[in-house]
Figure (cartoon, rainbow, N blue to C red):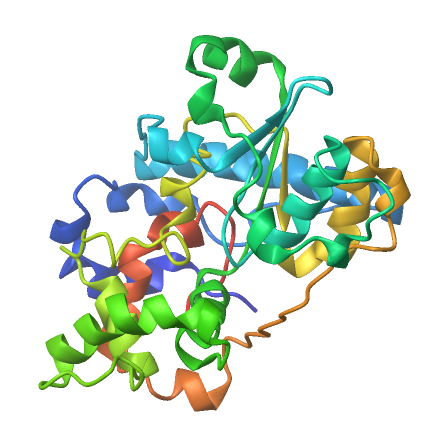
Length: 310
């Protein structure tokens, strides 16, 4: 049984000054699992879940007083298809490589005879146009195009990022993270710094959860709040799916966007990094303070999307 947020208020009171743009006092009306799904067919479930979740997001944004401007950085995370009038906002570590591969095939950037896994992952992340190049048309696009995004439990997402970028043996993937970010984390918490390859999960989580932590490294897209990537409080998405339901949500969205021929071939991942949020190997490394700081920093990813508290 999920726990109402109100039981955490005493702990939050000591740190809300770091998140003054969120209106914590309004949380009483936002208990988790506040919506109920009634009898529906399985094919309707993704649509119905999304409908209720989008309403929950809207209510939560109002209660938390979250309102962000739409920045170029956000627009760079939104791919578009003028022909189908579609927008997809990608969130790293939420099956975004798979969705980008779908987008490449959907928009005929890659040959149709290529399978999803045949599309090189590094080509995937550099070949799609985004809305930062469409500013003159932006109001019309955001008003008339169908828009979708996928979310994931915040802890699962950052654990997946940690495993990928700091534990992964693939040097091509992790080298810059060790060199540019790992060294800074080690220098901050474990002086003197070494080669950046010995970053503990506790140090990583504390680093990205620092209340005043607004450096480029602390706000890297792989663990930056999805509200700072896709801005669902200011953009009215037509579908919000969950990574946890992707085997049901993905086929629905593929059909919805006109890519039903790819149903059964999604998700496609050549580098899965499974993250179980209560895996004691990782979870037990975290101090109570770090867990609290993490929730406070990512509160706008927990509550609006109805995710349980650590």
